[in-house]
Length: 455
Image (cartoon, rainbow, N blue to C red; front, side, top):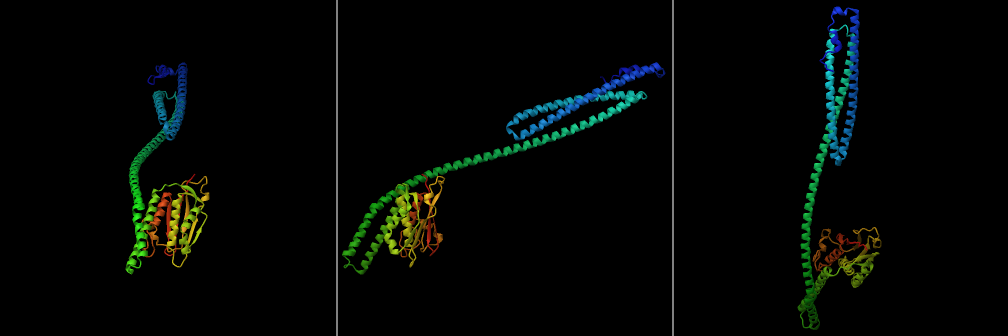
């Protein structure tokens, strides 16, 4: 309908003058035409109601689309892998929303046209005030309907504004997620760089270990050469010194002056000390060069053999030795016997004057249970050897295991300073550990920790 074109019914009425309307027949005709116009306006009102119904339906459709968009955005937040698919759906939804907005603009244009037409009709009503009382009532009703539509449109605009805010929130959340992802990627890059540095450092350490291993191999070869020299070239002249000194003291004793006899006795004593030192050095070197054959061994039998070797010293000192049930362990038998022998000999040597040595050898973790199926490869057996001797200052607890380290002079206690170094070396051959605790005149305790080897 063209809002600028006057209604045909009203056009027919325009030629009628006031004098003609006074006639009853013409008045009836005018009323019919007015009724026709009212009927036409009713049709337009019905069309407007249909348009409003369609607009309400479209608003519901928009709400459904908005709900679907909210669901799509929530799913986008939790499913990063489906981002591209959801983004495509969002583009389609936005296109559909744009299409619906265009449809709303068309409806608004149609509503504007209707308003223009209504304005024209209002102008006609003013001219025919007496005839349009009923029309004014209908117009008032239409105005109320417009107010309702306007209120609905405001609600729709509020809903659209709320949806826009929700979209902004989703966009902000997506931005935060991207920032977090960027930060995580940077963290991964840092970790990769640290790992690369660690691998470089490990490669460098491996090269250094190879160098140390090569140096150790050379040192072992030199030690083997020293062992051979000590066994043959040094031992033979030393034996001759001891033999000839003994013969002079025996055969030429009467021909020597007291001073000469004293010098020869000192020579014999020095030769004996040198013999002991060479033997200890040979023992220390053999702890590196001998084959490390581990055997399941009864430790009580090893202790018994060590005690038999020291039987005279034990009897001389009147020592009391207590040995608990040590069970079996996988050890290098000869080396472990040497270890026990050195520790027992150490306790006998450094006993307190006037007190018989009291030596206790005990096992703190039963070996018989160490082979359980659930036994860890990193478990250690613990054996302690304690005495009631003179002890030592705790500050020397590490120094005593160093080579040639003596806490006392030879005039106080004879020794070469190698015995405990041999003990530490044997423990290292067993991949174990030795610690000690002591106080002066309160004895000493040596704790041995030996790995339990699985079968």
